Image (cartoon, rainbow, N blue to C red; front, side):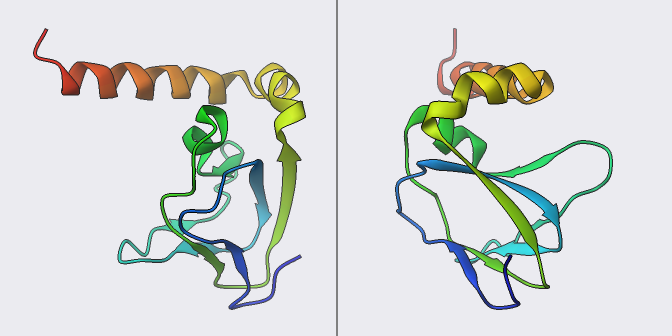
Length: 105
């Protein structure tokens, strides 16, 4: 559970836990001010690519409202993919798009 103003992650911290936002509203800090909140259509996760790549959080995330967030560790990667196949497909699409934009071929 997070209260308004509580920090979920800091920029540059290792993304060792995948966070799912169950309820409430979070905001990315550091200039982008992107809002992260459940839409009812699909589960919402924080910095998914960083978690699966073993990277770091690109920016901080702070609770804007009272929020409920679940955390899943690295040992749960297979279960996450199994239970959220749309998430895995989106990661593959994003990775493919990144590669095609980086290379003219």
